[in-house]
Image 1 (cartoon, rainbow, N blue to C red):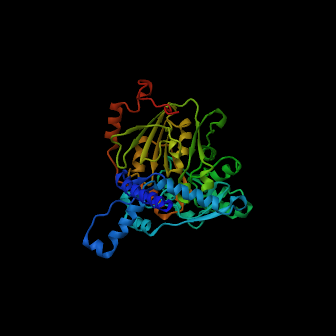
Image 2: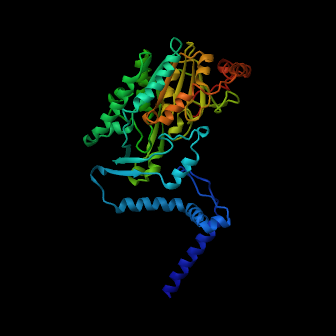
Image 3: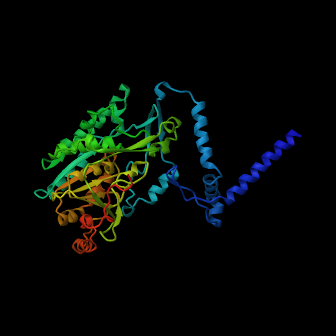
Length: 445
């Protein structure tokens, strides 16, 4: 009797899962895993006989199996409780691309899509998990540093007498692993950044970001589940820039602090480690005092059709800083000192940029991975005083991303005079004193 009941329950479960598979909505992207999900393959006799159709169908079923996300998390929890806990919860996880991911990269490897990957897009290699926090076991390469410096020197030479040029490269989290056995990574970080400094021409300025952050070693400088620095870590990067540029940084104690939590970031999604899940991050933002900002985002190619944005967005993750990445962002402030800056960055620069609003009337923020604007043309038209390269070390250690930054000087120039006239007519940037509706003063916080 009981055996028949068990068989009936199992049969009912199978029928329920089968019916659910056809009824549930099929998503195209997994935000939890940060990847595109397999889609239902098209049938062809060629794919059928080659075996490709059955492989793609298996992948589609696996990606859309009912309650799959809950099963993945249950598996993580089961493995965590089943495994042996190491001293300090210390373990190394190796993350490698699958063959399918490598195939996609090779198919998409064209400049028009900005697909030369840096650390935000493809994390591979070894990672240390220690007390619920993840550290990347990469520390740069002093042999590649001169390539980055050569690119910066090119801009410094082109802009000599017009604009100052700064290297403001952030280290990797491996420089701050709190165990002596990993000190070699801190040494390697320093060697890599020192090599950048020593290769810069006299016309370029070097911001010692690592040196400044080391003075606050025990503070919360890096997220435990994400590859980015925190708002506090970025603040010390900003202080390093101020020291190199001869301006006084705004004291942290004068800024309003706000907190959003919890969140699990990019490195957790790669490792799916339960100890990291048990220690989610929180986002801390520090709002510069007395500054009003107006922010717009542009498409990759021109300054037409700007979209209103904000200095901070109401998201509980790293995208809270300047609302995430965009090809070009323009920040206008009520700091009427006539000074303007341009920032070339990857996502590490997002949290850095927010502190510059205290010192510049206008800030142009170029994401070298997506922007097809002509950097030198915009700098000339806008009369930019300071050009700042603010990025994570992983972006400065790739010949592909270095070339992307170099190409910003050679992109096709647009008719910016016409666009600037249009901006004035629409009063996009002159409305600070005229319209409270168009004034964005950190609206989500």
